[in-house]
Length: 94
Image 1 (cartoon, rainbow, N blue to C red):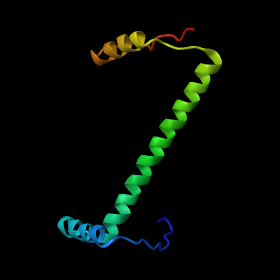
Image 2 (cartoon, one colour; image 1 turned 135 degrees about the vertical axis):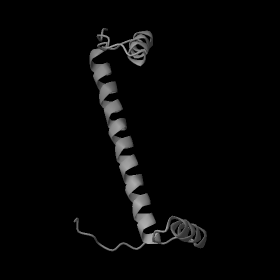
Image 3 (cartoon, helix red, strand yellow; image 1 turned 60 degrees about the horizontal axis):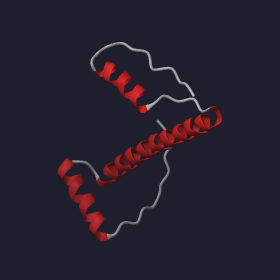
């Protein structure tokens, strides 16, 4: 089990009440609900940042090489995949 530490979190009365009401409805503690919400938020934001970094790398590579596929080429490839055909992605060109 991972080590844990205590963190203080200040909530306004409205949010605190909503958390408590939802926790009771879900038959969970407010503590569990807040931990779960934070874990989901961090997971989502880490994935979002990975996607952003990937896009920045792709943009930098395009700027350096000029290699690309057109939207039409990408759409045609995706349409084949959607229809169940096994198709390699289109080759990049300048």
